[in-house]
Image (cartoon, rainbow over all chains, first blue to last red; front, side, top):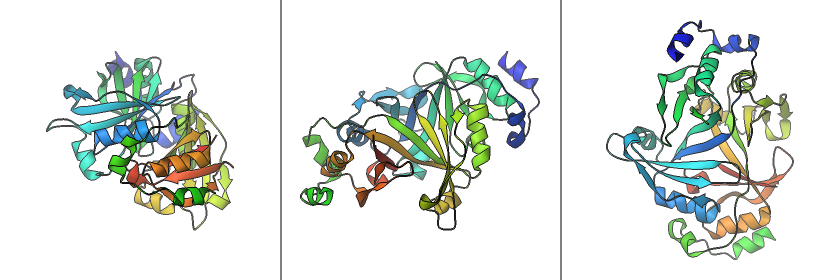
Length: 158
Length: 158
């Protein structure tokens, strides 16, 4: 359905297309900021004991190749990520940024299928054609960083 | 006063010091995520017309060498930054990251002086010795990215 819909939409030039289009779509809350870190326990301590955030325990998600800790702040969360296993999708990212680096920003959307149609219609590319089940069990879709000021954006079904 | 206090605090090794220290300090809200962008108007359109955020107009802050647009989301803001003038402090950052990149994360704190003493006591370095007045008229202090997983953190007086 999604693919069918989006294939009917002519891809427009990003810099100019969206100004001519108005609808009521909008991102909801910033669910989390994901940061890839070199030492998960040390980072968890930083967020818990220096910044005062409420932190989860360490969670291994083998199917996504990551270990994670969530740090909860007043209005949003920080997701600390570290590679798990040999073929982790964030292994190269950490090697390129050994101190750590912001990996992505995740926004909630009311209706992921609608959101995908909307962003594509506005000329923003998605990574992959179909939503996947994200690390937290909800459908997600990533947007191409080249269309979003070099920042990887995750849209997560609310 | 701040300098006097902090000079009395022995700098401890970051990896081990903070686990032995407990108090009730904590960061408040994530006030904003700052992103340095190559084209401020295009980025403002992305946040307004693709992501549906409420955006401010373009604001020039010559004393900080930046032009900025704020994009307001349900629970936090994104601050889009672009260099202004020849000696902008973010000029090199944009040259190194021509697509754009997350520049810093800003958290609110109830009492900036107390926050500075706290983070230093925990072994996290600040950039500069004294708070400065930030781009939005409030006292701010930045934390050293090398002590914060490669991420530049701004603490802002609430």
